Amino acid sequence: MYARTDSYQPKLFYFCLFALFWVTLLLFAGGFTTTIRAGMAFLDWPLSNGSMNPQGWITETDKLAEHSHRLLGMKVGLIAIALCVWTWLRQSRGSVRNLSLALLATVVFQGLLGGARVRLDWLNTQAESNIVAQAFAVTHACGAMIVMGLFVAITVLCSRRWMDAEKRSSTIVPDSIRYLGIASTVAIFLQVLVGAVMRHAEAGLAIARFPLASADSLLPAYWNFAVSINFAHRVGAILVSVFLLLFLYRSWKHSGTRRALIYGLSLLLLLLLTQVYLGALTVWTVRNSYVATFHHLTGAFLLATTWALTFLCYAPARALAGRNT
Image 1 (cartoon, rainbow, N blue to C red):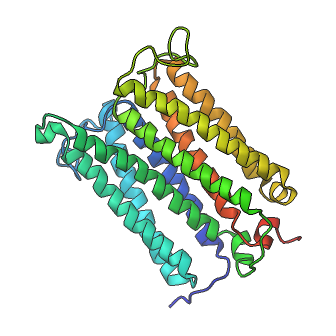
Image 2: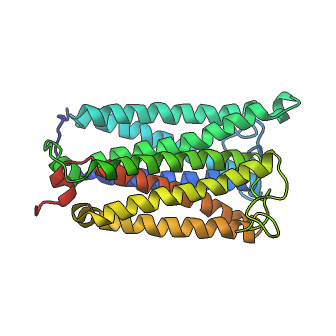
Image 3: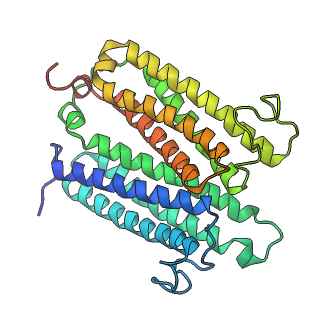
């Protein structure tokens, strides 16, 4: 019988990194499936055309995208089960055990949301409107970000720096930087929500110009729901950029935070610049499937990195500054 411990467990930490790799693949598969509108390649769930190995899923793009998404979801579910069992057997810290349990519950709920999105689609229900299935699809997209955030939080808590200094109560990060980190994380999540509504409403090209919205103006020439949600996504991108630049500026200006988080802050800036470019490129390439998918994936990375840095801002001083402080 293994004993619980609060010491650093390298195998557990590397397993968390392994889990994040598979979550990345799942996010890509889900984003690509939505981009090419293959979410209803199979009308049944949890099986695909009544099988775990449906005919044609390797050779037909829409079936390959959707079935790969389902298989990867199952893979992440098994990883979540393994992580939950591992932490409950070996981790003495209640925070890690409870987070792993919350993660498993969220992954299960996320799978049920995906199933409801399929079973309640108007192709199955013959309803006059598809608003119910779209609502489940948007919730499913946001749920994926919560799953990723829980994996990131557990990974940070299982890292050597955090665990070696967890019992120290003093911190070196000003509250203003922490609050900016929280605000940035919330802003990105809301932007993901707006983006999910836009993608599932097929409004990604409702405004077909960038950076202008019409021939000679930043505002659209006319308004409807698709144009409004697309424009809201553009405005949200500006607000997210402002929050992130303020967070980066304040974190970089503070010598202790800059020294401790320099690589993460540099990555965050690179991701922000890449995301802006991919957003523009999505319009310029008339929503190329791979460009749009990588725009979605980079947004997830932006959220994960901001959340991880914000989480680290609450780490004990020694965890941030390293062992040499």
